[in-house]
Length: 275
Image 1: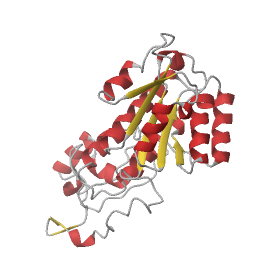
Image 2 (image 1 turned 120 degrees about the vertical axis):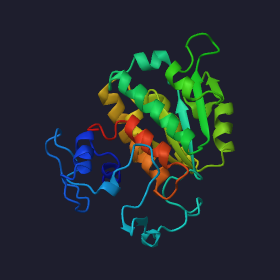
Image 3 (image 1 turned 30 degrees about the vertical axis):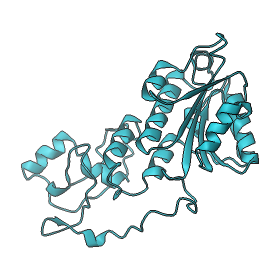
Image 4 (image 1 turned 180 degrees about the vertical axis):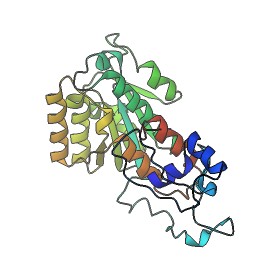
């Protein structure tokens, strides 16, 4: 992963050195960077430097042409048998990212959680996941709807408003999840100790595989958040993260339809803050 990114994002200084012939044409070598100010790339061949957003290209070449014979990826797995998340076997549930819930977060910085949930929503759209969006108490006038930054990303996605704290106990929401036909459920909700925990436990009891996105959720205290994650994990949930979801859904650089968006989201999600 880091080798591909490094080969596509040499710094301007390094690019200039290549053009001037000051760097030896040795193969790309990646080394650990204990000092964050140190460049990740030690030396690069001119043919390995590409602009951000270009499609994935194999580094090994024969007479300047990509050596496609070195690519040995299997075809995509049967989604019904795939143990990992894929665009064909997963759905994304986003629950209660509303002003009151966001403003009451104490376990993590509010801005960080907003950035993470917006990134997760964009990932769901990139890979065409069915998205089930829900709010609580909007129709009653007690709460405002989904926060604008997230709502703008999810334009056109139906939102199911509820009175039930546990979304699984709302008929419309429950039926919408079942209607996706997916057995692997990515879930993000506020707060962790309530609106994430309750539907997760219920879905697990019905035979779904549930994947709480741990860095996109938060609670009213760090203890409440951590305790809730332990509870759902003990019940059988499989914790994941925004970047892990992104990598798991992409899975192969040869899946070129989504490579550009994959690379773009990697950087926008700050997976590589040194660049």
